[in-house]
Length: 465
Image (cartoon, rainbow, N blue to C red; front, top):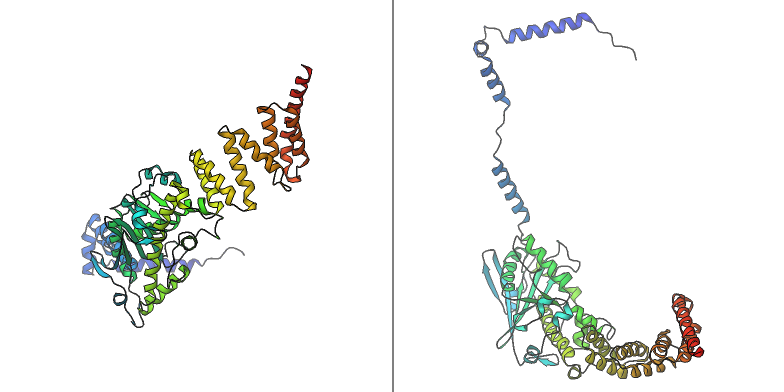
C-alpha cells in the first residue's frame, strides 16, 4: 500500500475552522469568557482542575467499609427449615446457655465413681498409676500425669475429610471430679451458634493441664483449631499436652484384633457394649437432615454416640495403664498382647518385665507368631547374660522343619565361636546357614563367608599349637 495523499485544502480548511471555533469560544462579548481572561494563570488552573477532581475517601473509611462487608459475608446464617417435628430441647435434657456471641445448647451427664466403665469402675481407673504415659506418648510434659487434671475430648463433625468447610457441630468434654465423672456436650443447633459454642468450649479447656483424645492429634484438634480461627477466637488447644490413645493402642493390640478402632477395642477388649448406637459415618447426614427439618429424634443418638466415645476413652486409658503397670492383673487374653508389651518394656528399659512378657507370650501365642517371640526372647536372654537360655532357644529354632530365616544358625555360630571357643561347631552352623540361603537373601552371603574364613583361621591356629 502506497503513501496516503493528503488534500491541502481540506486540511487547511479544517485547521482554519478549528481556529475560528477557538476564537469564538473566547470572544470577549461573552461575560463568562471575559471573566476567565482576567484571571491569572494560577486561578485558571485551579478552576480547570476542580471540575474533574473527585473527592477521595479517607483510607480508614475504606477499610471500615470493607470490614463491614466481610463481616456480613462471614456471618453464619440460619438454615431454612421446612418444618419442626421434635425440637432437640424437648428430647435431650439440657439447657440453653447465653453468651456474648449468642446462644448455645449444652447437656451435662454425671457418673458416680462406682460406675463400671468396662471391666473397671471409674474409681479404679482414677487410681491406676499413670507413669508410662510420657513414654507411650513420647512427651515429657505427661511425666507427672494426674487424670483429675485431664480433659477427655471427642467431636462430631459434618464430614470426615476435615478442612475449612467442615463444621464441628458437637463437642464432648469429660473430666473427673471429686465424687465422679462429668461429661459436657456442646451442640450447635444451627450454624449461627458456632461462635457461642466455641467460646464456652475454649473457657472450659483453659481449666485443664492436658487433653486425652483418640486420633485427636491429626483430626480433632486441628479441626477445632481451624474453627476457632475462622470464628476469630483465641485458643491454645494445639499447644496443650495431648495423650492420644490411638498410638499406644496400636503398639499393644495391633494384630490382636481386626483393627484398632475405638468401637472394636471397646467391644472385644474393654468389655463394653453400646445399645441403640449408630455408625459414625451416618452422623454428618443425620445432622444435615436435622438442620433442614428441625427434627431432633435422630440427633438423640448422636449425643449417645459421643458420650460412649468418651467413656470408652476413659476405659481404654485405664486398660493401657493397668496392662503396663501390672500385666498379670490385666490378664491379657492373647499372646500377641504379651509380645507387644514385652517389646514396649524392652524399649523403655524394663528388662525384667520384658522377659516375663515374652515368656508368657511364647506359651499363649499361635505358631505363626512363635518364631518372632523366640527371636526377641533369645536376644533378651543374650543381652542380660543368660547365654545358656538363649542357646537353648536357638537350638530349638534350628530344629524347625521350615525355619523362617538364618537367625538361629548365625547366633549359634557366634555363640560357639566367641563364648565356647568350639570352632568345629561354629563352622558347622555357618555351613548350615550358607546352605539354607534363599535367592532373596544373597546380601547375607558375604558376612557368612567372612565369618567362615575367620573361624577357619582360628581353628588352624589351635591345630598348630
